[in-house]
Image 1 (cartoon, one colour):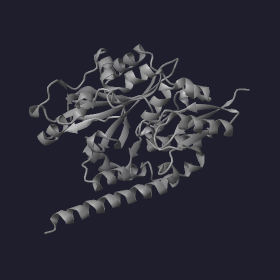
Image 2 (cartoon, rainbow, N blue to C red; image 1 turned 120 degrees about the vertical axis):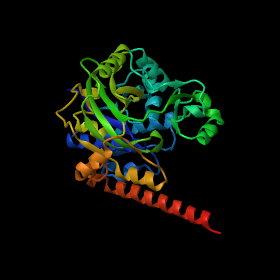
Image 3 (cartoon, helix red, strand yellow; image 1 turned 60 degrees about the vertical axis):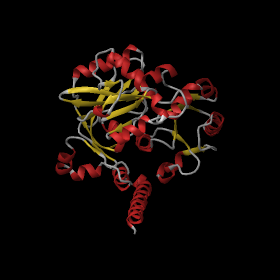
Image 4 (cartoon, rainbow, N blue to C red; image 1 turned 180 degrees about the vertical axis):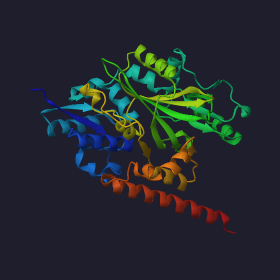
Length: 384
């Protein structure tokens, strides 16, 4: 008899995707072990805390520490196959960089090799790949100046080749912000593109090792400031079959398999490529509603019957953004959804469920603290 599969998730990052996957595994009686970060890992504020089978000793990525956690899982579940589920960029890169070490302690890694993963994950190489298949890109700016504003400074690579640290895109709207950015030595890690303002879509795909890719779409409605996590979204139909075909051919040309999300912005009827995330993404619960199966990474069963119009909301993330003084990015159709389906939208909140009520309360209290800190700051600045 074949050994049963037990999925392994490293927590402490991308919590919304982790929660969505845990809910799916619970509904379908699929075995899963969580490896938690020490200290303030918010998975402890969910009912899935009972799935934590190991806790890392160090609150930073250390190969020996993580391998030690896996040895604990091996002892707890000696008759099961341990399979890595890719939820967080940093741990994925560590696993792929040290694949033999992880496999030697019994962790199966159903992912592409490190070089191909980085080709898709790193913005510069992914954009170059898809440009060769005719996918439109935002205009690149060689020598950026005030007249080019607004612009997006994008990392050449997900991890800086100078410092080894993960770096993030920066949205630059003002001359002062541009001057500050250009004065920083991190500019060597970036390239510039024109900022696009239009409808935002996610191309959601699963590529099996053998067989036909499964594709779904979500339209984004609301996003955290500076291009961070999506706060509200809905499932939708394909916005452009030609672009879909070009993306599929691009991925297939390099032999990619696994899960991937591609962000696209539509301006004047043309879809422009923004970036890709070859892992489980934040609003993955919406993909599950559309029929995606996280266990497809091993099972070969690609999709179930799913919804075509489901909604997604991260309400506490929105409140945190507002209380910290940020201005979330509103995309077209947000107001229409709020007016037409307010109950359905709020009912789709990722944390407004019994298994995550403590986590919802934690984030709301965090938002309150941020708001009070801003208020105190204003009062101090306004004092004579």
